[in-house]
Length: 250
Image (cartoon, rainbow, N blue to C red; front, top):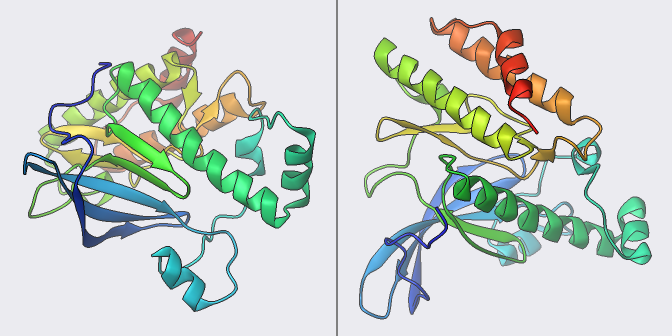
């Protein structure tokens, strides 16, 4: 998968904000309707990364978001991601205004690049369309009536749970084979739509080889999702799943 999806209308001549889909600890997801030059339309999920610090409610409103980020402990995720310029590294270490802006830009860039790598590798992730400043535009998973539910809130029967488990293992193998660990995987960073499991939310994804905690993040991801599935009647040994992933990594 390396070509632009056919449903994408290209450079839009108009955009309509249809409201907020979801708001999490580090981002807000808005639903955007894009109108192409030929009149065709498509729906896009626009991820707006919440600012790390603001001085007023008016500043939030100007940014088009409702609140500031509540995600704080990101240092362990950032290990292995280097800033080339010494002054940039120093700004990040000191968490100056410039440093915070660099981090914001890096998170957006990073998530887009990871998702594109995984999409090209055949992993079932939303197609990452573009990124700029504090936002990432990606494929919307859902239809006109509703957005795809998070796995943790979807009502699946046993056969669907079994299918979701198979999709999960396939996705984890694809992600790990590409050299990444999700870093924050749970039933709430997975979507269920059109009888398929979708992987989302990759700003904290870590390079397993470059990050000294990469293996630990992968293990935690596996334990988290295995525990959730076990509570819903699909049991497998997380240590065996983890070992199998490592066997196919690298």
